[in-house]
Length: 405
Image (cartoon, rainbow, N blue to C red; front, side, top):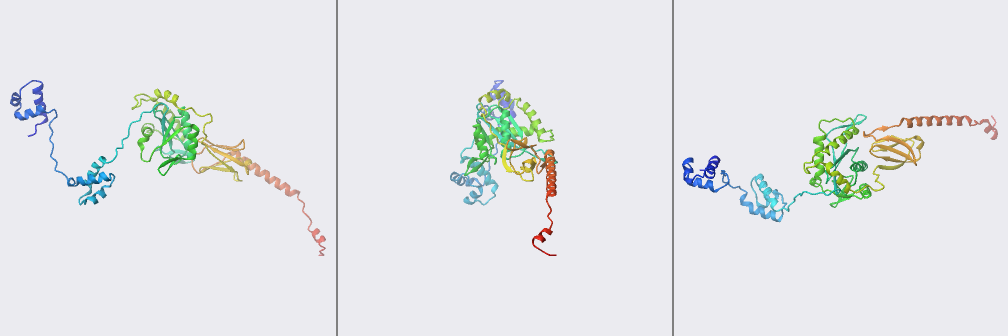
């Protein structure tokens, strides 16, 4: 007979609180003397434990262990073949799943302590909302997010695309908001920043130039290792659950404006891990960061082109008009997050706001008017030149050739 939990507790109370003897406890509770002694000997509450009936896989336990000792990652299906397993796979897979960790090297993820100015983690967050981009287009542009390791200071900004020039322009803008350059940046394998070659991370030329100008170290996380940048992963989740709900946005500019106001509040909250506010640590963090170099990097998109008669230049999928006086001349195009600027030497021949909507033709009315004036002027010159041309009398050829009609 198993002693109930209530009886066990009462027996111990009578003995410890009232000081009764075992004989008196037996008289009051009706329990056997040995039962009372057993209850007083153990500090653990009684529990019924059903004896195990064993499993069909028990007889193969030694063989499974031997195979896993030689090949810890051997699939359960191969193990079944090697041991001659003739029953269902579920019970075998459960036993293999239970035993395999005993033979694999430990893969623990430790907690890292960050020093001031030492490190920041960066990632792209794709908010699950559709943002109006203009001209009837909607989309889900990425948001670049950064978190300082020491202070947990959070910065973020929506950018037009994942292309290298947009990503690095956004990165530079966030570093300027941060007020310094952390000594090391941690990133995932974003194609615009790095790719893997024979298992080794190789930075793209644009990113190499960017981080070299800043003097910043770079760590590229291995695929499938989100814990390596857990700070920014949690920040992305925080943005999705705390910033996004209940908000609507009319444009990317409005998204960034609302985000900037929210970040002010987010950086003054008490951080659950630090037990203090990021604002309490950011001054110390910034003081230990690297200063910006005398000449800051310029990751904007740049290219040169000889302007054709069709005086528009293409940036991404959009065409931007250029003043027609640059037709036939070589021009330099620069596109950043805010605008597209075209120069002919030192003269600006076009300046347009950057279009987030794809496949658009953006024409400056002044450029269109100049083209019409130039076309009318050319037509007038042609008419005047044609009016001044002498029309020779064809009879002169007859006289010269002595042709008699």
